[in-house]
Amino acid sequence: MTLRITVWNEFYHEKHNAESAAIYPEGMHEAIRAGLVENGLADVRTATLEEAEHGLTEEVLARTDVLIWWGHVRHHDVSDEVAERVRRRVWEGMGLVVLHSGHYSKPFRLLMGTPCDVRIWDEAGEKERIVVVSPGHPIAQGLDRTFEIDVEESYAEPMEIPEPLELIMLSWFENGEVFRSACTYKRGRGRVFYFRPGHETFPTYYHPQVRRVIANGARWAGGES
Image 1 (spheres, rainbow, N blue to C red):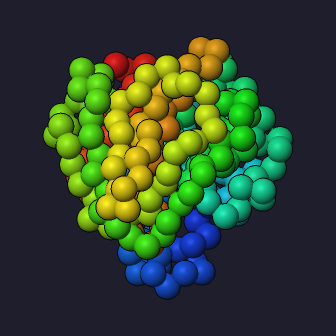
Image 2: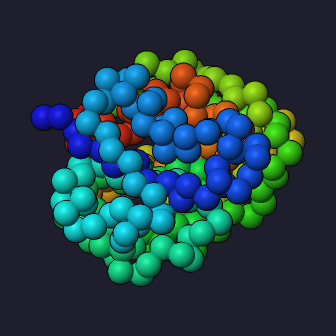
Image 3: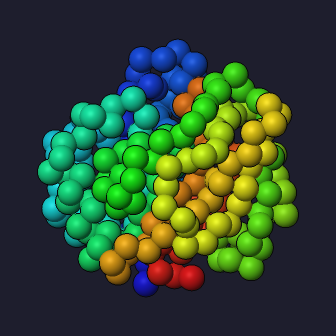
């Protein structure tokens, strides 16, 4: 079966922040889409906040096996109706991959049932070292045991999420903080994968190992592995 993937993005920073626009001139959703295609996932569409129903109509979600979500400063602008629609589709079996600050998104918080707050974050742009702690998991397939992102925003524990079904990766940052950066959940018949990296002013979504994680995560969330 060919996985049908929809990449959702606020598409706000790339229009209002010069740094983001320079790094992602076509939007982060297009960089993420390109990484999925690069890793063998051909059926990938995109959707953004300003589209009708945020691009996530009943028809679009019915044709989506895996939804990938990036959001940051406009979580409150996502309608409750669309957020509930996403939650319901996950319970029906759609996979969901939530990236970076999407942990604050309405769909993710509905599915987790917790605030999903992060204690500290720092946008200074320090090195992030990601350590694969579950190398046998399908999401870790083809990854190095550790890999580094030269500049990224750091997060710090505790993060107010439920105990993960599986912890796949941990992050260490130059400032000494650590974070659970790759976690899985199951909700109803659907699978949920949270992956931390991806601040809008850094070129994280061009990193080959990050792209591999997202593609692996999409395959896992879609039930291929």
